[in-house]
Length: 100
Image (cartoon, rainbow, N blue to C red; front, top):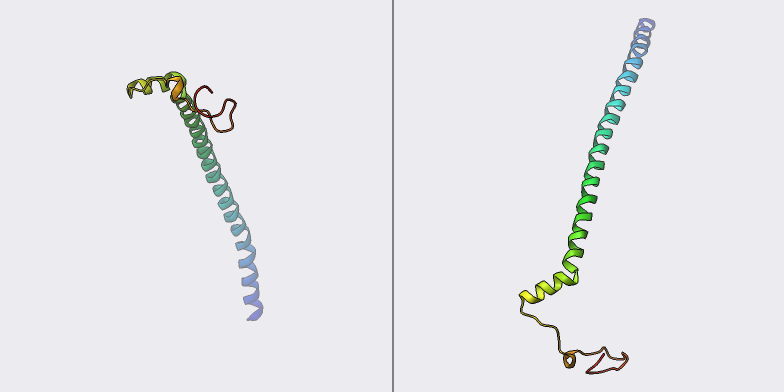
């Protein structure tokens, strides 16, 4: 009886091993395909984010332009300082109040 049981076990393992290997191969392939799709999605997302960043940098530089700052200042009723209102930093040439 032992001999017959061993034969069945060996036969089962001999049949199950290729099936298990095939299932493993299919699983790995399916996982690879899914990762490929995810990578493609992430690349597209990165491309969009880089474009958004460039657009925001352009907008930032436009807001920092001297012309834009003058428009904002005019809207706030600000005027250019008179020469006596300009203070030079300590240690700068001419140092102190008055001309820079």
